[in-house]
Length: 358
Image 1 (tube, one colour):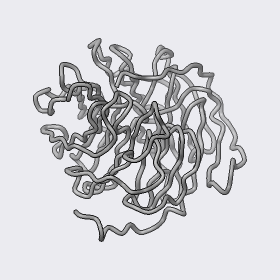
Image 2 (cartoon, rainbow, N blue to C red):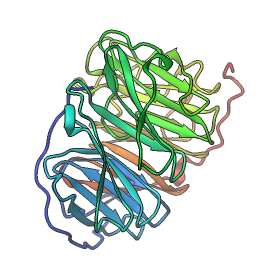
Image 3 (cartoon, rainbow, N blue to C red):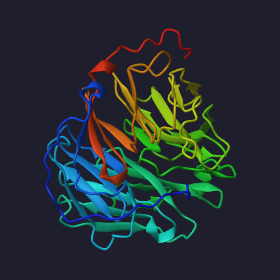
């Protein structure tokens, strides 16, 4: 969606040392990143290898589980905003920049950032890339805002050597004023070998779903907040092909709650609002078998159960994206280069779905 904020400045490649805990009571430990860029892209390749990305061509890499970071810029991309990064190892990673027209691009490195290959440039002035995901090192998918009434979806089957646009008539038409949000690199999720979901906002908050890697699509309505260009679903996560969660809200009114979190137990066919309270604007959600972490400009929240009850942790914070490092730990990134590690053992509650209609 084309309502975006831009941020500035990145420095040379630097290695940094872990800082002391911000607050042990919050299980939140800030670490220095060495940059003041706004960070939205975040990818965990392993419990040790983590990549992040952001404004002014910035990318960061950690080889010790987020404790220390090296940061730099992609040469020739200093004016780009990398809203998503997808990494497979310390060497292999993809970057996606978001912006109108040719500011939307895809880059790849196979040597840890020593060199970057520009794989794809969007030349349609109406286009705007939002997020990407990969089933494996070869097969990936990108979603962009609607052009001529249809979402732009690109696919690769060869590690990005060729990106092909999925035929428009295979994708259900977008509603007037509907788009996707490049808020945290998580408006799309993949699972298994062929499942993929992407989430929308604006005048509608819907989930598009394919079970054959994009050859055909269906779309489901959700009860999430919607109706304005600042509202809708900002993030989607699936722990398996049946269990999914969506998060969002109204980024212009981040204190607004009530319909900012919903879940599905049928692979995204239907969605039901979560009764977790309080709620605020969430730009990113990540989920595993034991825990969900949701972050936004107002709060960081942890829960062992999507459906009802109380958060295990709900604390004031300002982050853009979150991912799990392991069942015990998560990592978050935000504005002004903020990065923090979050301990999540309090989340480890077996989810009781007996009272949820399937």
